[in-house]
Amino acid sequence: MGTMETGRQLRADARRNRERILAAARAVFLEEGADVQMEPIARRAGVGIGTVYRNFPTKQVLIDEVGRQWVEERCTATASALQIEDPAEALRVFVTGASAAMARDVGIRKVLSHYEEVDTAEADALHLLQLKTLLDRVRAAGLVRPDLTPPDLFGLMCGMAFAIFRGTEPALCAEVLLRGLRPT
Image (tube, rainbow, N blue to C red; front, side):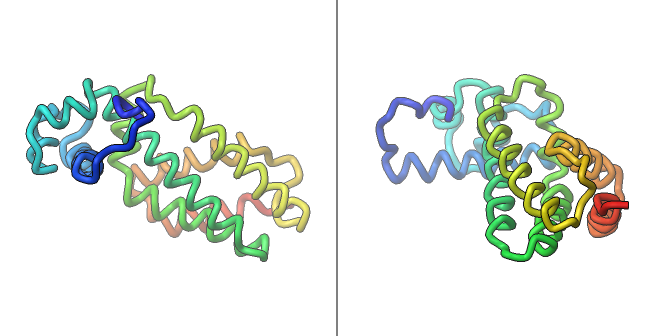
């Protein structure tokens, strides 16, 4: 959570500034890549550079928070898919939603891949647990290969992200992945 891990609540205006900085960072990273300086982020957020550095003392801290937020969004989407009673529909919603998010956020993935030390371990662990729950459900229904593990699915999703990044249509990626997960 960057510099705000002090346990105190942020004032409403400070919270809004922090949210604007994060939204601006995502947009600027998409447009300009990982090497962008902090000044364009401050301009896009409509705040001074001091406000950016007060919230995120380094670009690495800002990138960590953008990465953590991105993985948490994937966790929220996976949790939504897990609420669907029909296992086949839950898997379809998960995979098609993930492919759409990957297409939308391809630039964020590119930025995060430039920084090997992005700290998303806690959110990644939650996401892996969610994938296990989803796989257990669809496996019990006989809808996926019995030997498919959560790390396998995670790896396949990473491959799908790479294909989308290279220009493959997200819906096609989702369809091929879903077909490939079926038991033989």
